[in-house]
Image (tube, rainbow, N blue to C red; front, side, top):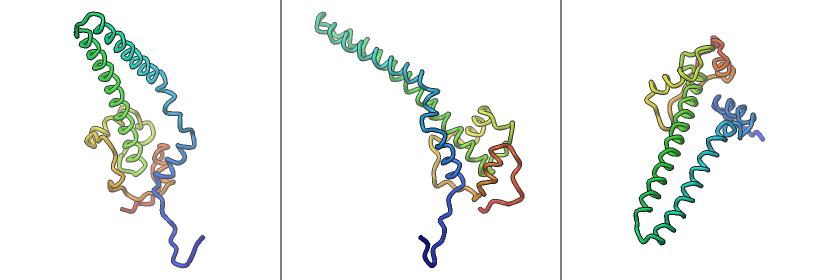
Length: 162
């Protein structure tokens, strides 16, 4: 409902792009990591089994050295899973920053230049952030221009408003 003095709410062009991407399916990005998730689950289950066996060994032997094996296995399990989670998080942040900056016109890559390797280079050039601030300064761009840049076309003659 519109009333006098009502101004249309302006949406960020990236909001429209994200909305279109979400329509493709929420679980799409998790499907390719299903094997990795299964490996993590198997590692945790093995660590739980080892914990049970080591606790029984401590009771049977009356010694605490099996607890060292248990602690070592848990440390290795958590380090491997933590390393994978860190790698996946950085990869996601790198590609998101890269595509946002291409859509905004900040990154000069177009067409065949849009690759994962160039995304990592751009990510390192931006300081390798752990998260992307929603309050970072971004130019106002037209949605059509942002989509054209992502498709690899040169942007139109319209200039973005800063």
